[in-house]
Image 1 (cartoon, rainbow, N blue to C red):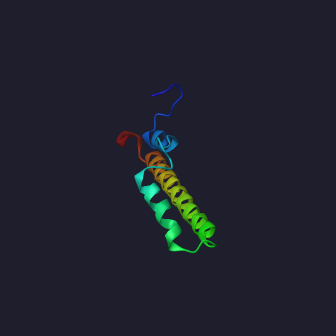
Image 2 (cartoon, rainbow, N blue to C red):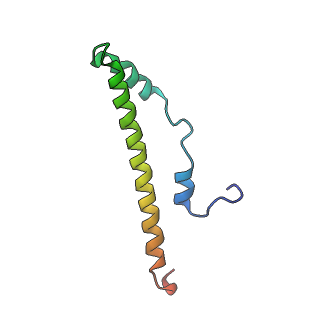
Length: 84
């Protein structure tokens, strides 16, 4: 673990982004299929929605990690010392 890194594994996992945040075979397939779902005029709107939903999904995942971390810390803080 790098110097100054937190000891809490939740923080360590949440703070480390995946090696390739956007990419891979699945994304290439999705992006290549999107143009066939709409007209040329609607293509920009489809890509905008695709990216907005992907970003919202990532934000929701980060929020859930934060809630889990908060719950973990609060539940440890309320335990009597002999149970720790």
